[in-house]
Figure 1 (cartoon, rainbow over the protein chains, first blue to last red):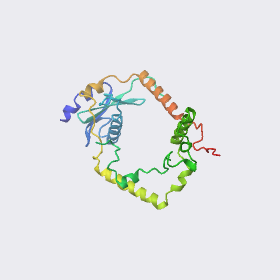
Figure 2 (tube, rainbow over the protein chains, first blue to last red; figure 1 turned 45 degrees about the vertical axis):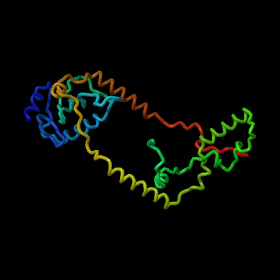
Figure 3 (cartoon, chains in turn purple, yellow; figure 1 turned 45 degrees about the horizontal axis):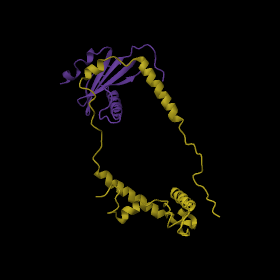
Figure 4 (cartoon, chains in turn red, cyan; figure 1 turned 120 degrees about the horizontal axis):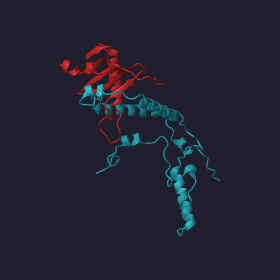
Length: 99
Length: 159
């Protein structure tokens, strides 16, 4: 079961770690995100908040993936089959983002 | 069949709930400050000018809330408390009948999570553009302010 969920996640380019989360908690984790309950909680909240945004007249959330972009790495997050998938990937883009 | 705000079956309690704190003056039965409307003394053969003036007067009366007349219906302290209690009871009853709205079920964003997560990262230029737009929007929102151009309460010069 867990193997089916995570198969392929470790082959994602520049991945540093991943999390698979359900409503009840972390189902699988690896790399820098191994057993990282705190990040799991934050990502869960962020994706819940983001998925509440709707474009008018559209029932589904208008995105497939949420990216949390930091200087050195990016968290890419998606939801499928009531499970939240988080992959931490290296950010190889040279210029820093100034906000 | 009645509409949502149908008052056919309204109880006294319900009517009391919606009673405004400052009553809207009825232009016919209760003219502000007790001034008599000209309408009552206008002869039956109205001229066009008088009709126009009357309509202006009526329109004005409909658009104002007579603050000075509201003094007479000031609520006592205990009335406020009663109203507050009445509203919170009502709210408690209503919220009990609402379905439990805890964490909403997660939406499904994709059926191929691995593919979505493995695809290229958002280009730097896109992120920069979005950051810029967000900064503009933030700046615009922070500059929204109320520009008071006229007095909220005005004195009508009644001779």
